Image 1 (cartoon, rainbow, N blue to C red):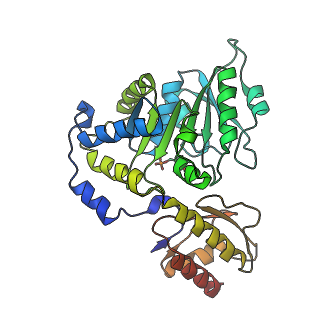
Image 2 (spheres, rainbow, N blue to C red):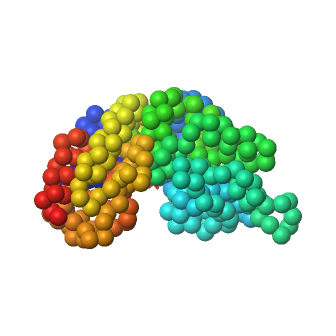
Image 3 (cartoon, protein in one colour):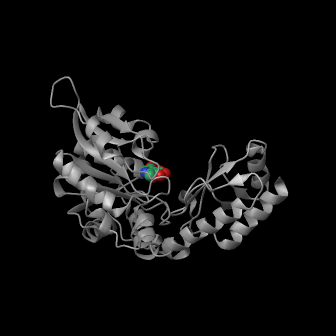
Length: 336
Ligand SMILES: Cc1ncc(COP(=O)(O)O)c(C=O)c1O
């Protein structure tokens, strides 16, 4: 199967499977898993934070961050398109009693500071207490400029807010900008990283933050049923992903550009309204094309795409090479 639906579909390679098979493990709820302890210590230092926590998913890591920063009756500012607002089942509100205050994302994915400032509630008992600004990078494949991150830090300092980054794909951002990851992470009080997206691990995310924040998050993780036992089997895969699979993200970005250029040459397809910055390609599909029929035809040829949205989203990752893109384009031409 050639699968363009997401970068979450990658298969662990044989070196990763070997590392998993041979991982030293222990009961992580007792703090006894050497592989998890090694990952958490390494990740905290590597990204410039005091502490790190291995979590079951990006959703769990974001929820822990929101619940660790905010108490019941607090609120967080975020984008309308933020994953931790729109696509995480309302977890912060449902489980944390935390009010989201979304504002429109600008076309480049940023949030305008004047809009954010207007959304901050006065210190008055009528209102929820605004505690946190949550950004996402990359967002819809777009990279937030470093200058914007510095401004966001200054904005939060000025308004006494904490600053969180949903960094599910933060390594795609760092590779696209050609900077070390710490040029991004240095601005944030907390950051998540998904190990199971473009980085290619099968399961797991990290939450990074201060000692106090991670201490609180560890307790919340237990409460939410996320205290895992011999999960070092997963942590070694994540550790390997962070050490081996970062630089190659540039290939995914180059492949995404290639894919967009090829799609543009097809009648009825246009990517020109969207900029490809990392591994995500958006494409407008003309109304005369039956998207669901095309998707089914491609599936018969063992190519998975998700065309229900318009624009449709196609994603490149380590299990997609140039030849796979050519196969897709040939199959699309034949299926129309
Ligand atoms: C930006 C972003 N944040 C968080 C998540 C959640 O990650 P998970 O699927 O591991 O819960 C995703 C998942 O696609 C995502 O795209």
